[in-house]
Length: 298
Image 1 (cartoon, helix red, strand yellow):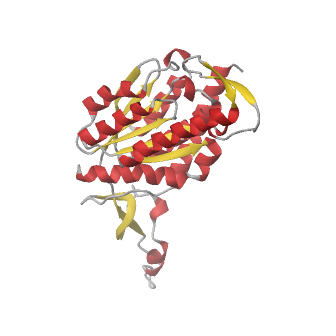
Image 2 (cartoon, rainbow, N blue to C red):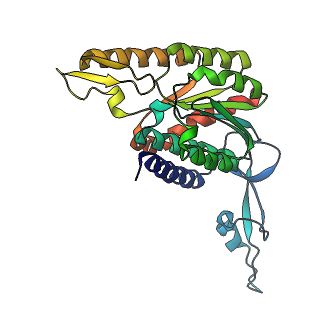
């Protein structure tokens, strides 16, 4: 199996896993005057043929049995539904992200968010960042994740070392009322790129959530007292030095990026590989919902 085929298989596997996980949850953040399936209980009513049997209130149904005829009226629970929002999802598919662990994490996170947005009837604009930003609009959540799968399986549409700031003009053009911006990327961008993203967020008043995907050996020193030569996958630059000094510089960079995001009050979450992503499923969703909830008042 080629490297590209392996990436494609990993992407599809963890997209399905994320979708299944999101489907098993009843999630939401805000009420509207409409009724349907959501997170917050609203009322009960008699069951109709089009209702989902998972929400039958069996306790109330059991009490509705007519002792004379033995017949009963089934009842179903009714919930508040979410107000529809607009989601701009930026998926970083540049060279530094094309690592098995990172792609697995990216697709798991994306699938969680996009399945949730699909169930909330949100409109999705997908920005795939590779050799250049590619914008896809008018999508539903499940369409967006399938499109991402097609992109990662096509080598001509991924890779490159395009800066994160390349998406800013695209985001600016499509950010509007009730819009949330979600970015899935890594630390392999200049801190100034994150500063520019923070400025855009404040200018447009667009709630933003950023997921910073990292491979364990990018952030954790594997050994001490050694010298190594590292290759930057995006620039081709070779860096030779003592590992302690290399990782000291890496940690300084990471701390700088996190400080920029914290100062700008951007919700952000670091994910250390797919195992960490799965363990922090609820936190991933909470980070997205926190930003989405803010869009109510924008």
